[in-house]
Image (cartoon, rainbow, N blue to C red; front, side, top):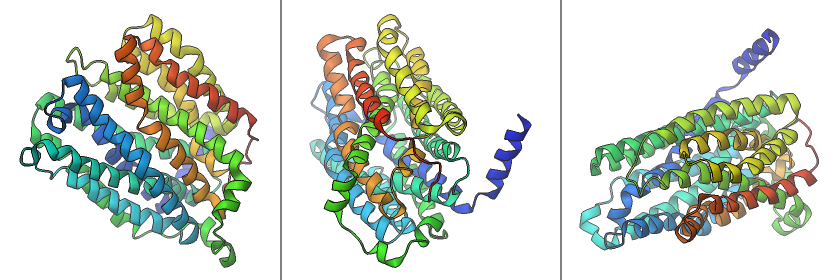
Length: 414
């Protein structure tokens, strides 16, 4: 036990500053992308003033569906190309600055002056967020993991997710406090804080070096940009990544966005999701350690199996949403914790960004913005959380099928 502790301590001391900056960027990006989703129920009556309460919430999340479906794929493909041609640092710098500005501007929108048209301005800025996020989220993680080299890749992946959880927890905390205050000023502060953290991340990245994996590539490989040839050669891997990422997106959204919305009818708003996000971070790190011990793919398969086995009985017999969150969270974490390291292992360095980014573009455009509206419509029709759980269960089963067909990747990043 002591040997493992010493080993982990040595690994952390040997990490370059770029790894930590990459993790800080993941925190800022996660906050910026989550703050609207957490605060949307409070914003709904400002965006859609003449709609009923439930319809206003539905439409406020439908804006996310539009943005993620249309703009995220464009941003992911664009920044994937930059990452493989110009380097990971450049894609991170450009996308970080754009995301920070878009989020900060949300806090400056004059709600009452714009009246019924305010939702249009939010839609434009949410679209901008998703365009820049297409490069920022996975770009920061690729940047951090390639700088960390071969050191405990499962743990390094889970720590990248952990810093994102810090951002999610901060966004949820600010949003929950805004619900308590019921003050428009606090809504604005939530977005302005996101813009400020993004700018800090932008300035830090300007002092980073490019990753050794990218700088070690021959110049002729950087000039080869043949998208059709790449997609044709790697379509099986891309398809597998799409469905595993779909499980990531749907399970996270179901647990931390959709379940808390079911409390809206009772008018209850509390910090249960904040608590479960803290547990989420702990289980992510545990999943990374297990992945290094038993193998990344084995741990991910176990997580999908457990999630699939418990979700329907749990939602049928349990009425406490917090308990449901806390049971499903560790199952999902077994997949989410090591997922980024698993994705990096699938592609050669010169194709890494475009392979990961095109997969995330497809998965996000289909599943990210659609999860909440789909589950809300099912719940409105059947008034049954168990029937809603069929949707994430279906995604889990399909992702299991693709994952089990993939070869166990070698534990190297370069």
